[in-house]
Length: 110
Length: 110
DNA sequence: TGCGTGTATACTTATATCAGCATACACACA
DNA sequence: TGTGTGTATGCTGATATAAGTATACACGCA
Image 1: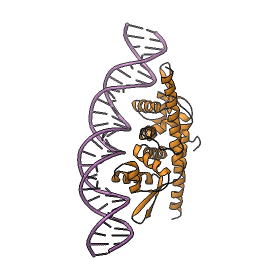
Image 2: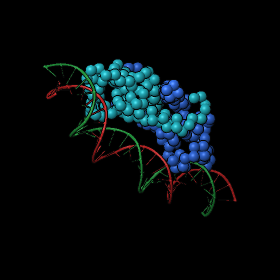
Image 3: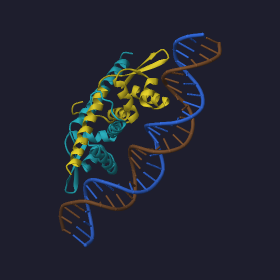
Image 4: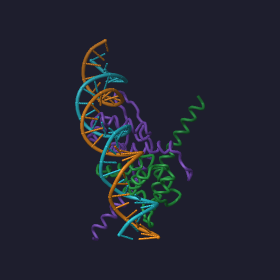
C-alpha cells in the first residue's frame, strides 16, 4: 500500500470490489444485514426485490468477500463478513451528507 | 448514519459513488494523482490511456466529488479532492492483500 | 422415495458502460 | 483575427450488467 504504484491487475481487483458496492440493491441488502444475519427469504421481504435477484446479488457480495453464508437446514443465512463494509459505506455517506448540507446551505441563503 | 435505515434514494447516490470507483482506469488516475496535481496530458502519459478516455473519466470523478479541477491557462489541472478517496481505496486494498496472502499461502503449502 | 419449500441458476431482453475516433470548444499567442 | 495546442464531447460498436421468468437443485419430512 503506502505510496507504491499499484499494478493494473490489483487495481482491476479493487475496481471489482467497488463495482460490487455500486448497486443500490446490493447496498440495500448490506444495510438489511446491519441488524444481523438474515436468510434469503427474509431479505426478499426486507427489500421487496425478487428472489432470484436477491440470490444473485448475494452471490456477488459473497464472491467479493463482503458477506459470508451458512446453511441452516433448508435456509441459507447471510451475514456481513466484517465491519469494513460498513466503514466503506459510511465514508461515502459522510461525504454525501457533507455535500447535501453544503448544497442546502446554498439554496437557503440564495 | 449510525444504524438508521437509509433510503433507497440515498443508497442510489452512494452506489453511484462506488460505481465511479469501480473502474480500473479511474483508479489508475486516482493513483497517479496521489503524487500531486496533474494536467490531463500528464495523466494521459502516466496511464497510457487515450485522451478522450482520460477526460471522460476525470469528468466522472469530478462530478462524483473525488477530484477537483483548476484551469491553468491552456491546461486543466486535476487534484484529489481529499484524502477520503485514498482511505476508501486503501480499505479495499487491505482486504485484497489479506485475501491474496491467504490464497498464496494455500498455493505454496499445497 | 416422493413432495413441498427455500435457494440458485439458465435464458432472455432492456439498459448501461466503455473505448476509439472525429470533432467541437477554450485558451494563448503571433 | 487566425493558428496551434490542450481539453471536452458527440457518435458508434462492442461488451457488461440488471431484472424477470422459468426451472433446476438442495434439503427436510411424511
